[in-house]
Structure formats: structure tokens, C-alpha cells
Image 1 (tube, rainbow, N blue to C red):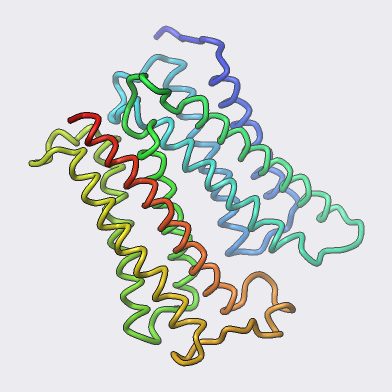
Image 2 (image 1 turned 90 degrees about the vertical axis):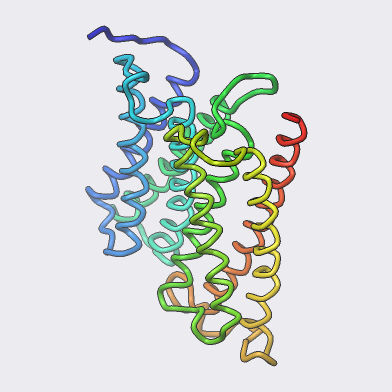
Length: 293
């Protein structure tokens, strides 16, 4: 089997991401003394990113793109975008839980600083890979390499973060309006994830309707749903008339990580972020329909 090695900025960027993510989880396991839960999530982010990047490099090194069971026009950039978001989340969460309030000079603190630095470097490397792989105007590329495709990745990732915040402890069972918001998050996540899987599996042609028009209709539905959730979630969490608390409790400052009020606020912010992402997605998808027409 012939080995194909073409030196390019994309290859060097992937090798950098591979090295940085490897250092991050290796040092974290070796001497950072992480507790289970949050520490496991951070290690998963780095290890998953490392394993996926290694797989992409090996497939291209041995020229196995045509034998891969997925669309190679869509898979590498999709994975790189998820890896960038995972490493970014780990770069934020890790120092928040494991460096905040840790004073003094100790080897554990030094290990954790090194982990944070290399996690940030891995994030930069993956963002660079996405930037290099992204389709340019007039360039023929897979859907996931376009703006709407990358937005789908961001939308599903933000939804996953929302699920983490609302599930431990459960934040949506106090009122039916909050359950409606949870339904919005689930419906939009499932449809966006299905679109990504259809593109990676090259199954968009199997749909009984034009794929671009479906994307435009779905983006419009998602914008309406997320707009309602963006309004409803803060009202029923922070308005005293509906049992909410608009002031942050004093004990939140002394708790490690995020307290309940912080998690509710984080969900409110992330809901607004996803609304903006879906709005941009709608604009892109509508343009796609009109351009094709």
C-alpha cells in the first residue's frame, strides 16, 4: 500500500493539533490530579480530538479516502470543527474548575497550567484547520465545508452544552414553559444532527424533496422556535412574577464551578447564541436556494 505524503499547511496544522491535544491529555492524566466528572470531560475532549485527527491523517497518508464509508469532502472539516469546539470548551472549563482559587507553588499547579496552555494551542490549531479547509467563493466543496454546514456543527454543539447545564440538576421541570424550551432544544438538535449525518453519509439525494429547500424551511422553523425560547427561558427563570430570581445569590461566589443561578443564566445566553446561529443559517440557506434557482 503506497504512502502518500504531501506537505501542505493543512497537514502541518493537523500535526500541530495532534501534538497539542496529545500533550494536553497526557499531562492531565500524568500529574494534574483531576477529579472525576469535569476532569473526565476535559480528558475526553482532548483524547477524542487526538484520536480523530490521527485517523484523518492516517487515511490521507495511505490514500484510503475513496474506501472510507463516509464522504471525505465533509467528514474531516466536520470533525475539525467539533474538535475545535471541544478543545475550546475544555480550555474554558479546565482553568475554571482546576486553576481558579489554586494558589501557591506546587507541581500540580504547574501541570494544570501546562494543560491549559496546550489546550488553548490545540484550539487555535483546530480553528486554523477549519479556516484552511473552509470552502472559498466559487470553489466546489461538500456542504459541511460551507458556512451553513459549519453553522450546523456549532448549533448542535451549543445544544449539547445546554443539555449539560439543564440536566444536572434538572432546570426545566418547574413550569410547562420551561419544558417547552427543552422541547425546542431537543427538536432542533435532532434535526441539525440528522442533516449533518445525511451530508457525511452522502444520503441527501435520498430525500423525497429538494435538500436546499428543506434546509431553508428548517432554518426558518428553528429561528421561530429559538426566538420563542430566547424570550421564554429568561422570563420563567429570572422574573420574580414567575418564581424566578433576577439577583445572583451571594453563595454563588463561594461555590466551585457554576451554581444553579449561573447555569440558568448560561442556558439563557446559549439560547440567544443559538438563535443568532440559526438566523445566520437561515440567511445562508435562503441565499443558497435563490442562487440555485
